Image (spheres, rainbow, N blue to C red):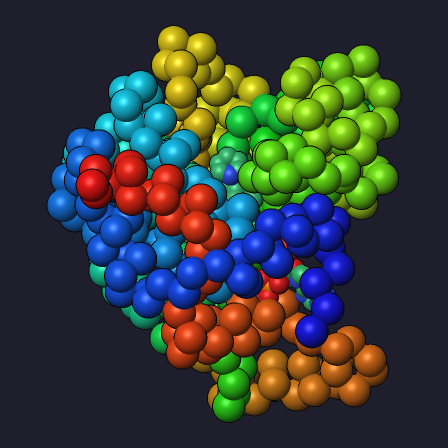
Length: 355
Ligand SMILES: NC(=O)C1=CN([C@@H]2O[C@H](COP(=O)(O)OP(=O)(O)OC[C@H]3O[C@@H](n4cnc5c(N)ncnc54)[C@H](OP(=O)(O)O)[C@@H]3O)[C@@H](O)[C@H]2O)C=CC1
Ligand SMILES: O=C(O)C1=NCCCC1
């Protein structure tokens, strides 16, 4: 399967390293990460949720949001910018609308605190919205939406982050890398899930490229003077990323600021200010979910129709659908272990306080 997105090309060397390290069983990686989170002040519930999420990203080859992120999680916890013991509050804003205040905690525990009631609303109404504010989203979005599709539902999720993306033709960073994810059931197959930033690439992949000494694909970003650059350090040091696809990606980044921040009460990416929290790496922003019961469409054959469409797309020449690379890697790593570079493993063990 080809991995030709700019993000993947920039992270290719890292990914190769990740394919050739020490194999670690998924459960062992979860346990190691859990010890790190607990050691750095999270509650047991938060540690369990974040460890599962981060290990799942590493397992599926979502390198920009796998164990690469752990020092950042630790930095954010140590700085006090994020509360690892936050108790989210869930409020019903209507028969199909949940408002969740993550209370300056991580997004996933807030989402999971509301998920049960949210599913009831989707089943009762055919559609429901969950608006999370004051949350720190440090990860990929697919782990949140894929399970909905496995339960027969169509799911959309939107997150804004911190200002590091210039609007098309602009000079100042206004948007975050602002990912969105979509998941749908497919008859007889794994769900089709795409999960993509509104920027040319994820900020995490720029940082990996900087660390590994790689250049970015042309058209990824600009330097501090607004000039096009392929140097990841110039993008990180006062420069910015570009939206993917020019004004079209710019409009998606805008929409995500509106859905994930304006609508939820989360901070705009531009408003994020962690200057008083040195070491913090995750913003206190927002996240929106829209989940639909496709049976309400009345066709009685929704998942079959999606499977048919995928068949036609492949027949037309697309070699694979989004998500298929992850599923293949998941099967491989659950069988053979998740390869971790020795330096990464040593770093994780040190953070866990292992001798
Ligand atoms: N929390 C946050 O604030 C942020 C999180 N992120 C996360 O970073 C991650 C990476 O984002 P991004 O760099 O944009 O992702 P990519 O460009 O790597 O991939 C985007 C999507 O395209 C699919 N895809 C890639 N190559 C192909 C192909 N050849 N044919 C068909 N589909 C393909 C991927 O599927 P597959 O996975 O199977 O390859 C994925 O669903 C995401 O998980 C995102 O949620 C990004 C920005 C901010
Ligand atoms: O990779 C990114 O872009 C981000 N990931 C986690 C939160 C901030 C942005």
